Image 1 (cartoon, rainbow, N blue to C red):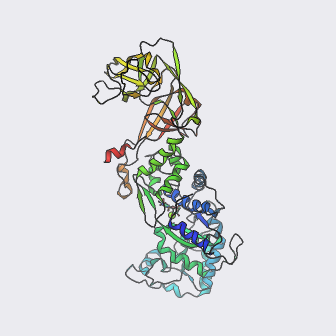
Image 2: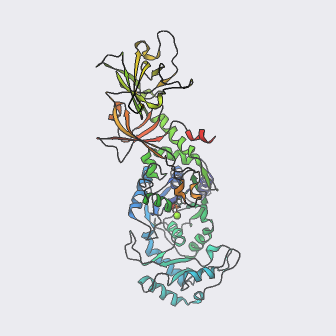
Image 3: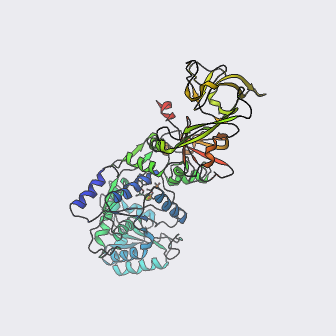
Length: 559
Ligand code: ATP
Ligand code: MG
C-alpha cells in the first residue's frame, strides 16, 4: 500500500461519492529517452494508486514528436515499468489515435472552433501578446469554415511546406491564460514516425492529443506535473468541444477525465533532463544510458538497486503539490534498508595485501562455518577456507599507525573476522619502497573469538584465503557531480566528479561467490553492498558493482 496523499484522497472521494465506478489512471511517457527516477515517482503514483484502489492503469506512449522518438526508447520504457513491478491494463500509443485525433480536429473546424493560420512563427509570437498585454486576432481567424476544411485537408495531403500553415483552436486571444490564446493543435512535419511510418505529414500537438487520449481510454484521473497547470483550461476546453459518445472500452456517456497536478521531485547531485543525459552519453562522460552512476532506471538497476528499494523511495518522498529536491541519502537509505535485510554477507578484499602466516603449516588449510546473515538463520551458512597465505585490505595496514588505528601495524595484533588473531612481525617492501607483503604469526588459541590469557583484541578485519580467492574487478561508484544542483550551471560538464568511478582490477573474493547468481546481492563485510555487473560479469571474469556504501560517507564530509 502506498502512503496517503492528496491525489489518493481525491480519487477515493470520487469513488465514495459515486462520481466514478472505479479509478483509471495512466502513465504517459514520451519515448524520447530512458526513464529516470522522476518518472518512477509518476509510475508509482499512477500504477500504485490503481493497484491500491482496485482500479486500472494504462501505459501510454505520448508519441506525437516524430523527430525525437524511437522504438529503442519505447522498448526500454516498457521493460523499466515491468521491472519496477507494475502491470499495465492496456498498452497504448497516442499514435494509434491519429485517425480519431484528425477527426476531432475536423469536428472543431466544422463547429467554427478551429482555423488554418498562415502566420509564420515570428508573426505568431507578435500576435500572441505577453503576460501583461492582450494578443491580437490573426487575420486568418475570419477564414470561412469551408476554406479551413479545404486547407486542412491539403495540409494532410502534403501540399504545403513545413511551417506554412498550422491549425489553431479558436479560443480567446485576450485570455490572461496564454495557453488559451488560440493554441496550435496541428502542425506540418515531413518526418518519419517510428510507428506510423510516413502515413502522416501533419502531427497533433501535445495539448490536443493528451486530453483526447485520456478520454478515449476512459481515464478518470489524469495526473501530471505542475508545469501543466495553465494547460488544464485547454484540456477542459478541447474535451468540452468535441464529441466522444463511446470510449475505447465501450463505455457510453462516461464523465470526462480530470487533470490534476502534483510536484516534481528531483534528486540532488543528479541530472534528469533527457537533453543533458543524451549529451553525457554521446560525449562519453558515462558508458551509456545504463551507466551505474546515472539515476536512469536502467542505470539504477545495473548499479544493484532493487525494484522494491525504488518503490520504497517513492513512497518515502510522497506526493505533494510542490516541487521538491531530495537528498541523495534518502535514495541510498532505501537500498541500504532493503539490502541490510536481504543481502548475503561475504568477504571481498578490494586492495589486496598478501599476508603470510609463518607459524601456520605449509599445505595445511581449514574452514570456518559462518552464517550468511547475522540476524537471519534461514539464509544458512557457508564455509570459508583459511590457510597459510591470506589477503587483507591495504587500508587495514599502516606502517606507522596512530594510536586509534585498531587494525594492523608492525608489532600489532588484530583479529581476522571469524578466525584467529594474527600479529604482524615483518613488513616486506618492493624496490620502490611500497609495502607488498606482511609476515605474521597466528595464535591457535584464539579461534571462536576467545583469547587464552584474557587479552583484548580491539580490531577485527576481513580477509580471504590466497589459495582459494577468486579474482575479480570491482567497480566503486560515487556521485557523478560535485554540486548538489548541477542543472543550474551553464556548463554542467565542468561539475563532473573526477572520482565518480574507481576500478579495483585486482580484487580478491571469497570462493563462495563462484556460486553466485546474477540477481544475488551481497554485503562485503565492512565494505558495502555489491552486485554482479549485468553486462560485463561472465564465467571468465567476475565483475561486481558497489551499489552503495555501508554508511553515508558524504554526510561526514558535509557536516
Ligand atoms: P524529461 O524532462 O526528463 O524529458 P518529461 O516530463 O518530459 O521528462 P515524459 O516522458 O513526458 O518526460 O514524462 C512522463 C511522465 O513522468 C509525465 O507525466 C511527467 O509528469 C512525469 N515526470 C517526469 N519527470 C518527473 C519528475 N522529476 N517528478 C515527477 N514526475 C515526473
Ligand atoms: Mg514531457
